[in-house]
Length: 260
Image (cartoon, rainbow, N blue to C red; front, side, top):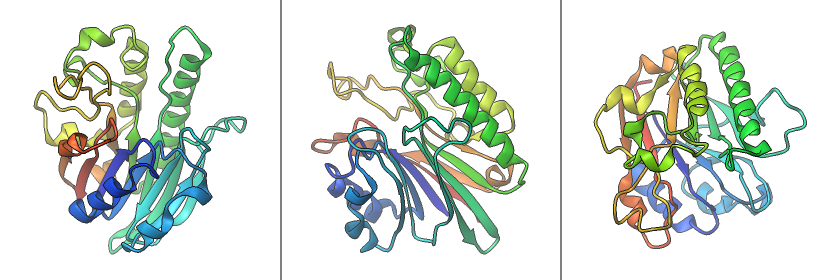
């Protein structure tokens, strides 16, 4: 099973890039973030024509997440548990059935948190606590699951080309990284690092200051696996070349292969 995640930064603006990636990489499941549209505005027909089922949790102009799957999507849940007052569309979860059982997949768009001296950073940290609590409840099910998405977290200094530029940013503050490590510590595996421990692995390049041309990137898009999924992890890769397309997203897809 091939599962990918991609912050597409407006699905309607980049529908051509999306269909080309689906044709090229042929993921069984693709988790999208920042689709930036309501559910009824999602370009469903183009995706369905390629053989994908769709689950969308949209929001006008901002945020929005979706799951595309070649397999039927079951038990679709929109919204991260833990705060009924949270109206931001940042989490969607679904189950797909495979020969060996079922796999649960979530598409996550974790809050950015900047500026750090505002309520936005407090919201980010609380959201991360909610995610950890929910992940703990999923672990109790003892089934394979994948929490995939844009985490807006630079886990370590080596995950940034110039870490000194990020020391006061919400993506790299010690408290942010500690929350992310705490999520891993409950028993999750960070898929890319389990497969590739090399330097220079980035998934985001800012539109400003020639970041792409200078390869001044950061790694903030992650796939976290339950033990039952990690046992079947075969490979992980970053599709960096998509950042060189005309009018690209500032993120690129990350893809994993599970032997399920």
